[in-house]
Image 1 (cartoon, helix red, strand yellow):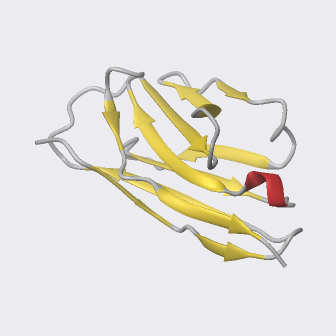
Image 2 (image 1 turned 45 degrees about the vertical axis):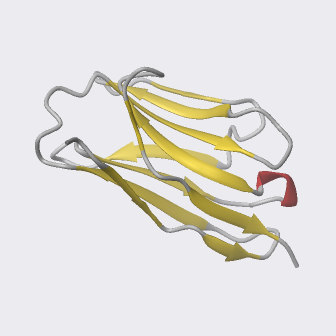
Length: 114
């Protein structure tokens, strides 16, 4: 069974940084897209950043210039570097491979608060 395992969440003060990582199990097969979503309490899940197999990236307007999505050389680990964090970035963050009908991580809590 394919698994995505996330790490790196936590509590950080406004203006701080966190790095999330998501590693896929070795039997995942082909990966076409990688993405990070987030869901804040009482809100719908929203797309934060995506990366295609070719390396093209897209970001939500709310995180442009602050967040960076990247992958490692094996292309089975995706990371999200989050800088200049704001309280409104507080949410559970989920990694996703191969779209909404693909694979999902278990979620990791990010809390931005002083």
